[in-house]
Image (cartoon, rainbow, N blue to C red; front, side, top):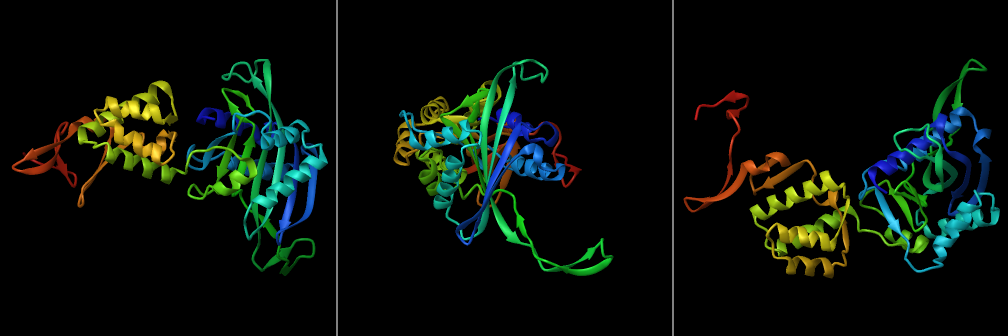
Length: 355
């Protein structure tokens, strides 16, 4: 899913226009399932609906490739994990046996010492034939499940004011449901339609994707976390013998891809071709990518889309991509120098300097 598709689905969790039909949940305390619940949305109060929708929206927030990860099921037919999700989705949460199996499987595979809530919602979105208008007749529907894993924490001991009795009294500690730590939307909403071979995964912490949980729970394929992607990519570029001019050309080509093609994920072959167009030696680049088992990277994890950062041991320069050509590296009097061509006057601490 791309940024626009995620935003389109996120709007379906606005309380007064939500596409959610039913909400179910399971409480895990001391590593045991202690209670379950399930109700149609219309049975909840407005305040409850608003809080639930806020939690679901939270699970669709963040940056793609960091906290939001696109996952794909293996292409082989009859993938058991995919089949389980389809059965539950198609039942609209009405198959109690399938729903409890889903709770048990999630509980068995999600490793945490905390108490938590497994929250599942069923929804059906009538996809407008025109994405720019909500008044066109729908050509198709998007039937989905969204699951949240939310921590349960005891609130602090306190005194509170009892309005009915008009007195201050001890407030019993309650279990508070926190924002989701993990979440998954199935199926994915790709090309403005359901894609049963993909799902969207949310992790509150970008550096803790819980890869082992994903493998046990869904047996899906995914990109490494953002930090690993950046580390491998930087190592591959260094092995390719990148020069300053190579780096500038690379950034300009990547910028064109973002602006013209709206590409967000770049496969290893495309990256190799971009490096080749930038004048780099691609054999070592391809070797590193292959050794690390990287077949695709999320472009915006690799470089900042708006600025470039040039560093020495002592100096840090940040420059907008559109002005990157004003900077060059030259050999002057036997020293490597960073040369900046000014557009207009030169100032220091706000004072215009005479050259």
